[in-house]
Image 1 (tube, rainbow, N blue to C red):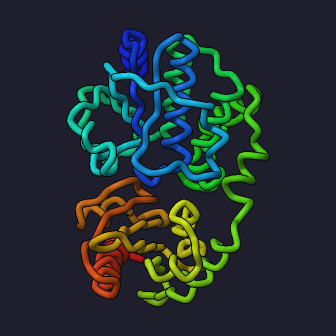
Image 2: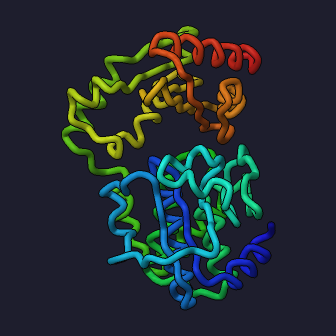
Length: 315
């Protein structure tokens, strides 16, 4: 769909359920609640749902209370695959009326899809939808959109950032978004448990291909030792790629039945293609998958796939 078609569709609905993905990040929440506030401003019934608890650092996005009603329309935001809905929202997997997303690996599961793969974040698309519905963003919406932009771009450091991304961020600041407070909440404050977790993760660091590949692991035992919560793990996946000389940074996070893999790569190496070997996907520089193996076997398999990609790229 085009933005105009998505706007026309939403304007014709009255009771709208907005779905965010499990292990929610700033983009799915910022986009979801940005749409929520816009729809409420239009006098429509709307609510946001997520399988997992919303992390404390995003609490400023939440309304005082969400209404309860039987939805007539279901919208998924920043969700490339229904598997990302999580167990509590899996009942909606075959009932998504509209998906708004920026992942090129989107499975096309919704009846209608507004997909813009070149967008740095779904929030970048969502603000166009909000404007297209005739809603003038207020400070609350501006905070939501800015949060989605800054979190999906690593505070505007990643290669997905364009001049358009920065113009939207500037527009949100002009509308009242508290950029300093949001940036600090997202990137500038860490709990003692998070610091302890970083120390554990660095102890797990393994190199391959003469340091061109770096792998870290997050296990259940580490979480138990440090007392860190799942919501405090965001940003860990950037650690391997920040190491000088690393072309492929890999983070393995233990889940039931195996390990969730997060890849970050430099130019010339497509992270989504590496993850596709294991049924995953994502973006060219950032992607993910799941490997149902113990730690050592999982690490060996993803390193082999990364080595093949490095050799193909001539690195």
